[in-house]
Amino acid sequence: MGSVKQVQVTFDCAEPMRVATFWCEVLGYVFPPPPPGFASWEEFDQSLPPEAQGSAAACVDPAGAGPRLYFQRVPEGKVAKNRVHLDVRAATGLVGAERLAALRAESDRLVALGAVQTQVLEADDQNESCINMQDIEGNEFCLD
Image (cartoon, rainbow, N blue to C red; front, side, top):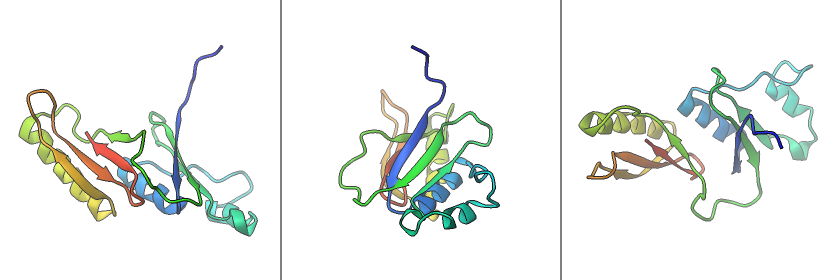
């Protein structure tokens, strides 16, 4: 049995392109090139049957280091806490007040994009600070 070479993270959502655009802004990701024969993803999307239009989107790390993110339209809304979430490493290597200030600044940037800050967990004897957030469709993630 071979080893896994790549990981893709998939989001179920109502508006794939809107959520993909949000995560591109959060992570500095980009949309991959459209399929061969199409000048844009919009042109590709228009070629699909009406019921499939707007049903998916993807974004990638331009450096190739992070996983591909895939967004697929589903009919049901989010009803429970995520069992898996992303940790957005916004303050790697920072500690104490400097870490919390960097996390708060990133939280402010993401709130301006439509995210919601749900909880600030300040450092204690065991853990450094982090901020719990939700994306534009309510998916939880952490600023770490």
